[in-house]
Length: 251
Image 1 (tube, helix red, strand yellow):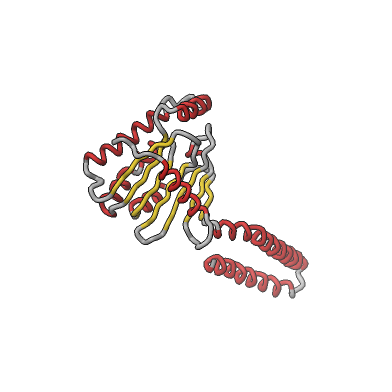
Image 2 (cartoon, one colour):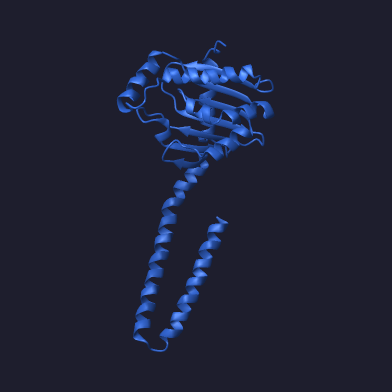
C-alpha cells in the first residue's frame, strides 16, 4: 500500500510540474497552449475520478478476500513451480487431497523427499481408489472431452503409489512420515495445505469440475491469516474430517 501511494504521489508531482510549466506558457497568450492546458486539466480531472471509482469498487472485494484468507485467485490451477517448491521444502506438515495428480508428485518429488528428510515432515495424502465405480465414471467424462488422453486415472494412482514405495525403499521417510489413504465417493476439490517451519499456514485449492482438468480450473491461493473463519481453516477441517474416517492404505 505504501509503495502504491508513493508511486501515485510521484505521478501527481510530475503532472503538477508539467501543468505548472504549461500554465506559465499560457500566460503568454498563445491560444494553442490555452487549449492544450484546458484539455490536460480535463484529462487530469477525469483520470482522478476514474481512479477513485476503481478503488471504491475494488476495495470491498479486496477486504472480503483478505478477511477470508484468500491471497490470490488464478484463472487456472497452476501455482508457480518456484512458489510451490519453496513452500514444500520449508514444510513441517503437508496435507494433499487429489483424486489423482501424478503430475504433481512427479514435478515435486525431490521437494517432498527434502521435507521428509530435512524437516521431519508429516505428509498425509488422500487420493482416489483404483478401479472404483467413482473413478471409472470420471474416466468416462474426461475421455469424452479429452480424447488425446489414453492413461486412466487408476493408472495415475498406481504411479503415485510407486513413488511412495520408492521413497520408503530409499528410507527417505526415516526422519519424517508419509501416510496414504483412499476415497471412493464424492468428487473432492484438489487441495494442498502446508504448515511451514515458521508456523505459517498456506494452501492451494482448485475447484473440481470435470471434464475440465485441474490445471485448467480456477484456483485459490489461501492462508490462515485470522482468528475468525477463513477458507484455510475450513479446508483443513474438511481434510481432517475425511482423513479420520478413511482406513489406512495397505502397504
